[in-house]
Image (cartoon, rainbow, N blue to C red; front, side, top):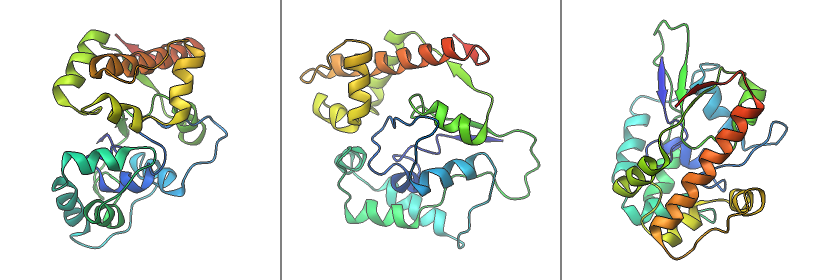
Length: 211
C-alpha cells in the first residue's frame, strides 16, 4: 500500500493542522515531543490505526484546499503561518491520509519530502525500513524552480523554513542562507536536505540508498 506525501499541507488538508508551526522541514530528534496531530498523521499513514470521519468529509476538505490561491498556500506554510477562512476550514475538516479499509496489504510504503530532518523521530516511534532516494542536485533545483513547490520568491522560501533548519545549514554546514535570490535560496535548501540525508545515511548504514 502506497501513501504519498501524507505530511504535505499543499495536498493533504489534515497536514495543515499536523505541521502547524513546524515549517516545511520539521526538525525533530528521537526524543522530542511533537504535536498530537503529527503523531496521528504518521500513525494512520503506517496503518497503526484508521481515522474516524463522516462520509464526504475528506472530499469536502480536499475541495476547499484545491481552491486555495498560491498566496494562501504560501502564508499557510510559513513558520509564523496565517490561515485564511478557506485553509482554516480545510484543516478543521481534514482527515489523515490512509489506506482504504479492507485493503489487504503486508507493507505500507510512505513517501515524504518533508521528513529529512525528522527521520530519527519517525524511526523511534514506528521503526520503518528507510529508503533514501538521491537525485542529482541540479536536477532537483531545476525541478523545484519549474514546479514552484518550494516557494515563488526568496522571501517565501525563508518564511517556510523553521529557524532550527536554517541554523543547521548555517552552523553545522557553515553556509549562510541567501535571502535575496530565488535560485540561490532553492539551491541552499536543496543542499541542506541532501547534506542532512547524507549524514543520516553515514550514521545508519542499514538505510537503503538509491542514487
